[in-house]
Each structure stands twice: as structure tokens, then as C-alpha cells.
Amino acid sequence: MITKEIKDRLFELQDVEYREFHSKLMPTVDPKKVIGVRVPVLRLLAKELSKRVDVADFLIDLPHQYYEEDNLHGFLLEREKNYDKLIDGLDAFLPYVDNWATCDLMSPKIFKKHLDELLPHIRRWMASDHTYTIRFGMGMLMSFYLDEAFKPEYLEWVASVKSTEYYVNMMSAWFFATALTKQYESTLPLLLDNRLDVWVHNKTIQKARESYRIASERKAYLKTLRR
Image (cartoon, rainbow, N blue to C red; front, top):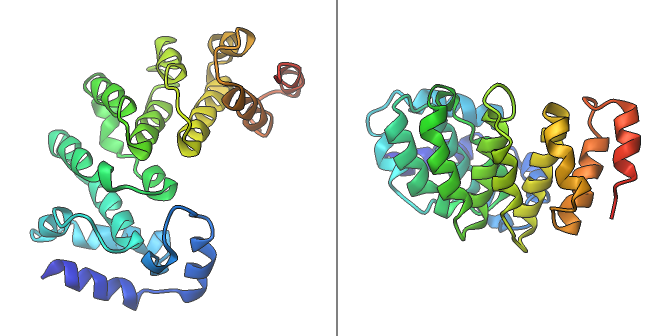
């Protein structure tokens, strides 16, 4: 069975020192779930497995036992060339994502060809009650809609998400800090009007001031807007 085969391969690729280091970065994940396989190695494995017909059996075998199985699952979804199958795959998988790393590694390039079709799904994901589904939706909006496809209303979508979850609020701050680097004039009013929760507001400013893509005079001004 392919799931057993994949587990065996992952343990063959194990890096114990990396496991000890990486486990500390994910407080929501039981260290016993972490095998310790580096991301580039997982990407290569996903490329290999994507050519197999029976990989579908692995993708429906949820929930997975190990963190690396989840990451491998994410990388396999990234390689899906059929947009509708990708959306179905994400909807099946996202409820089982339990950490920021697995959530953030997924950024399917095929989405660039389906920007209009993707927006309703992003709104649906952001309306979820699951932390990492919300975070994923925000991440896709940040990745694909802050450049040529930008509309000011997308800022409102994120601003309307109110949560007590750290990993949702951190993504929100990351989104607005990135928006300040790309769409400064449209984003600044949300800070001037105190539209964001205080924590998100201040974290947005902090992350924006850490960016190399924002001019020093703007960073100085943003500092005066802290609450």
C-alpha cells in the first residue's frame, strides 16, 4: 500500500538534528509527529510520487499520522494541474492542517490562471471556523491579489476577519504589512482610521518597518501610528 511505502521512505530520509530544530518552531504540533525531513527533499519526493496513479490512495487516506505526510500532501496538491480537482483536494485536506508551516507551504501556481474563479473560494475559506483554513485563504489573497489583480475591497475582506487565534492574526498582520509594501496609499487609511484590532495594527507596523521594500521615511511615519 502506498501510504506504508511513503512512511518507510520518509524515515529513510530522516534527519534527526533537523527534527529537533524544526519541532521547536511548531508549538501546535506534537514532536512525536515530526520525522525530520527537509523541505527540498520532500519536494523531490512529491515530484516523484506525482507520476504514480496510486498516489490518489495516499491523498484520501486522511488524517495522516506524521507532519511530513501532511507537508508531502501539500506539495502534491501544488502539482495538481486540474483546477477543479485542486479545489476539491484542498477542501478535503485543509480541515486536517494543524500548523502554520503546512498551511503556508501551499501556493499552487495554477491559481494564477484562475484568479476570478478563485475569489469565491478564498472568501469561503476566510469565513471558516478553522484556524488554518482562514489563514490559507488570507495567504492566497496575499500571494495572488496584491499586485496587478489588486482591488481595495480585498483589504476590507481581511480587515473584517475578527479572531482571537494567534495564527490568524499573525497572517492578517503579514497581509497588511505586505499590502503596505505594494499598495501603500490604499492600505494606509486602515491604520489611520484604526480599522484593525490593536494587536494586528501594531504587528502590521512592526512587520512593515522590518521590510526592505518600504522607504525609511515611510517607516518613520508608520512608527508614529502605533497604538
